[in-house]
Image 1 (tube, rainbow, N blue to C red):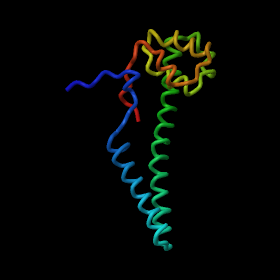
Image 2 (spheres, helix red, strand yellow):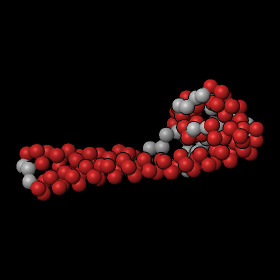
Image 3 (cartoon, helix red, strand yellow):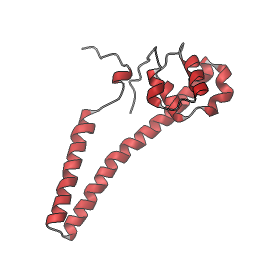
Image 4 (tube, helix red, strand yellow):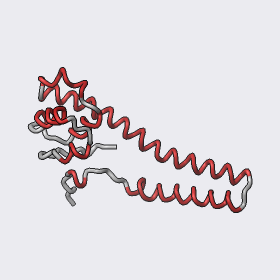
Length: 144
């Protein structure tokens, strides 16, 4: 079966085993540990609750750390693409925010220089808004 073509509408990466199943297990465990601590308090119950909170925090922080590293890689990649495709923007690369560069990453090579100039001129900083403006969508299938 061929993979569906990526677009703005379906580009968000969802891993069901992580986003739904694992999160559900972590959330149910936290609620259960909270209930145990509230109905039959003991130091063991308090420690179990603290551990459940820590597991939930690890779940979220692990995802956020991976996304932050991905944003740094995208920033580097986009600066290189812009230097290659629009050398005149070289002196202005420091003006781009991470949000702007991440929003531009789906733009095709022909479209990127013009869209990048528009993003700077209009001071667009919303990733979704920038992605909505991409007409020649280039899939990014190696995302975290």
